[in-house]
Image (tube, rainbow, N blue to C red; front, side, top):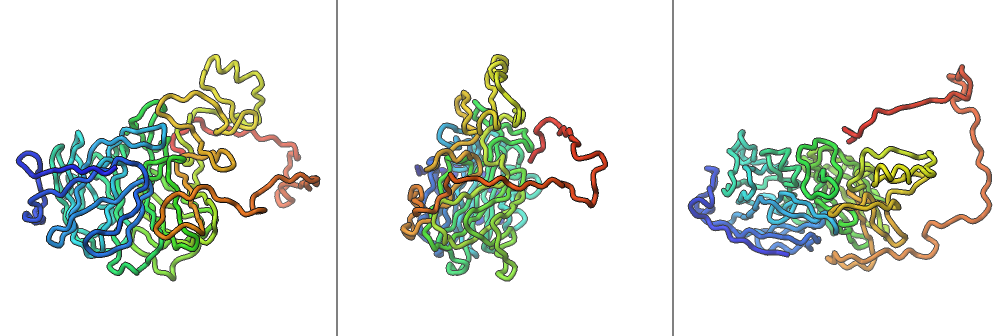
Length: 464
């Protein structure tokens, strides 16, 4: 839901800084527009300024602006927010204009941009415009290029959006705390010629990670690597909207990584090419087909493909524990162990103990009481039952009948007859098995019955 907040410059209410900023231009503040609805907002056409093809922020929105004597003005408000990670769980985060991540900022190459940043946090902050070429004093590094923005004050950043591409914004003040609390946002600078690199669908989202204990709502900001919630735009599956496209659409997906680890992002059913990196658009001659691209910490990637295969296709991080929600890291692996009679005895000592693996159940099948404001580890029901996914997972829905500009969910795909995997009910031939494992190059002296006992270090720290 959009709401508007009015912030007027007055003594004690705003401290406009940065000597390069036009004092006339900064004489009043633009409205601070706030969005509290976590649903994906369809992209509106630009109301003024130069034309561009707007992007879709998955489970997010783009920030409106006003034109002031040829300058595109935005107003960001850094503040505590409540973000619904998925139905059933909300998190106390810090963000911008009512949400985390903050709204996407969209401008056109060559635009003069002025961003008012009001700090309503309990501590100082700043904003770094990740990847932009700009005057050094506008780079947002507290202590190095500017003083911090004190609570209750407003600073102004002003620069020219010099090159088109995919960018991000985030604090460079008390960074570990503020980014762990969700302070981040996306920035897209469109090319002057809106026909350059034009696509039919252009999705953006940020990768983020949180450590929120089951039953609580506030991230543990001192966690360095061992996060338990991995998110697309601070949403986890099945709370994430799907990417709905028309068959034959040229699709672009822009991803920025502000977590503390890399993410191999994988698309099913299609090949894509990486067309954009942190440095801008990649030359066509340098591209090659992929189905997975690794996005390192602090990096941005744009991938493109033709959505020519109808269906419901998975799109996810390929680190399997990143497609899970909050899990018990201390639970041992018990595959192959006969649990008969053991679980009942252990449950008397550990009420939440779960039988996992081939003698128990998959993670979705486990039934355990959950504390309030917590999600199951893996869930999400599809047309054939549980998807057994969570975290960084969503679905690309390709439909022939999807209309241009229609971003609504078309529902589940109806597979043509004979195109769904099915059970084999005939006779099974006995498989031929090798009896000479190891070959003859380095034959075992001890014989073939050697048993190996392997013990891995205990603990889960640093698994990223």
